Image (cartoon, rainbow, N blue to C red):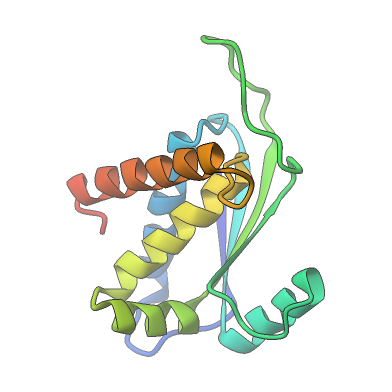
Length: 160
């Protein structure tokens, strides 16, 4: 799985290389949990609150920052393949995370920035492979279960 990380902002006291490794590990786990093809491509972009506000305004007509945006190239499709069949390599899309918003949410929730980034990345990456939470109770429950499974796996591997 190829995961490209772009850092449009730097957090004081956070090593960019360490952050990029965390992002790749979390995104890889989330995409595997969601059933992404092994040879897929994803781009993760880490931005400040202002850039996120601009993106949220442009693409969702909401003029305020948000924590995570996902732009799937699958257009809401779920990855549903017959058992044992693998999908061809393909770009899945982009996940944008506001580091400033993640830091504020981490403080509010009483956990680390590392954990908050993982929560947001898992959520965004699952959207890339067709999971959704605003289109019916069953699909919402499937997404929440996948998020929980993925975060538990990351905790067991001491990633978050």
